[in-house]
Length: 309
Image 1 (spheres, rainbow, N blue to C red):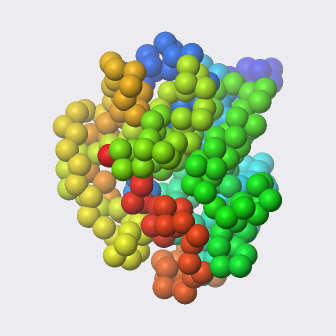
Image 2 (cartoon, rainbow, N blue to C red; image 1 turned 60 degrees about the vertical axis):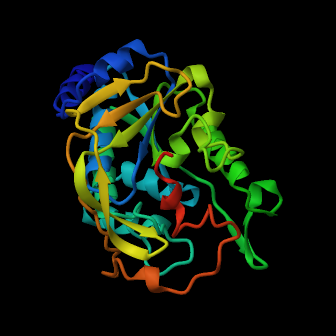
């Protein structure tokens, strides 16, 4: 009877169709499906939620999101909660949502759309479709004027070591599990370096190539995103021209930076920061912060790397 109840509950989930994705999943042996997004939009986390829902029809999946690894206990607690107001208020005290803190997420990943994604993943977890949600942004220490990597004896941050650590956290979390779907900035989702950073291996390039499928999420038309660029944090215009209906198209040449493209078929709209229990949101980017050790790693400038060359 329990199995019947679980099957009925799982089938009640509704996924928005994404042309070609079911066929890609069925034909792929990929253990990791990595989706590269532009942070700070409504549409890309929503698309990722649909990809998770569609992929988990065959078997439950693990999900990984580019959020601080120190927030793992908060994510676990929320997923295993009743999802009510008290549980959400407790979850919103996690680092990823906290306004004005030096370790806050400053590039659009603390958006309202990201919070809605977590609500969706909570529901899929309750339906038996999502086993667990993993946070895989490595935690850093700030000492003597520089960000440092505690897993390398507090060595000053090196972006290649940071990318490798991200991949390591994914691999460690995937041990003994089935397929994992990963949402991250598109710079980390590449399988080859950018032309302007030829010696910087992205996170996805450290995953086993024959077990990894990387997909670039792309929009069509003039839109906007809430993120932090050199000009500051806020709503910035985005214009992409990908006149393709909503769906997935794989690359024919294996030397491309992505295995394929997920076309949203629409323009992007900005998703502003999620309010914390204190009611604050969106003003924390004016807080004076310690300078990063490496401009590439700068949390308030990382979106400069989050699009392909």
